[in-house]
Image (tube, rainbow, N blue to C red; front, top):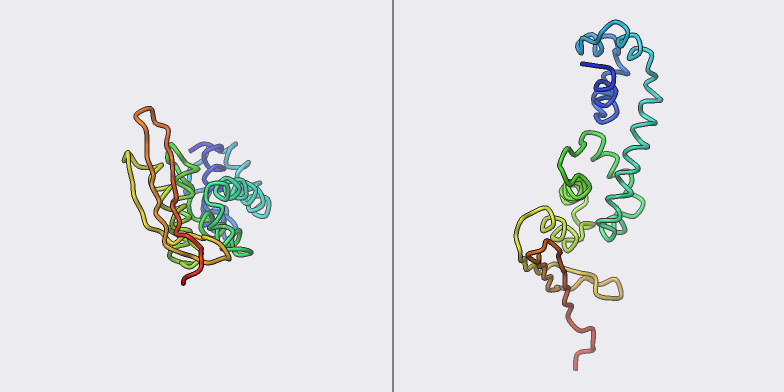
Amino acid sequence: MDFTTALGRLLHDGGLRDAFRENSTALIDAWDLRDDERAAALALDADDLDFQAQVLIRKRFTQTANIIPRTCEELGGNAWPAFLAYARAYWPEHARKELKDAHDFCLFVKQNHPGALCMAEFNRVRFLLGARHFALHFPRHFTGRNRRRRSLQILFRTPGGTWREWIVRPGLGRRA
């Protein structure tokens, strides 16, 4: 392994950063770096690695929050800590990594903060990652006065690859 690959692994994997902090020599020895690269790797500061990793994770969080804003809004002050907990152990290698990150964070939210997940956003992300041309869902969606009501979500992909989404909400009128 070369130094650049080692550094990349350290920045992408919180568990490796923990192992580096605990015993950097053992970790670097296991990677069998050349002597000159070994010295450079051992000279890395664990706090600086954590700081740089958080900068990269913050960038990912910003991209994810743009894709699933309602979910992040529902998480409120827990959005960043939840994303940090999720991203510390996971770095997407998918061709469409921003969408894959949003998808996998939705799965994390669904498991750890289920009330915060906006199913319409999750449906959209799954649709965009998939190959289907049409999808129909009935998620609970915010319709007004911070109330969730069933909605009809229609997702459609054209032969040209563009996509459209429609959300049909029930009326908010008064009952007689």
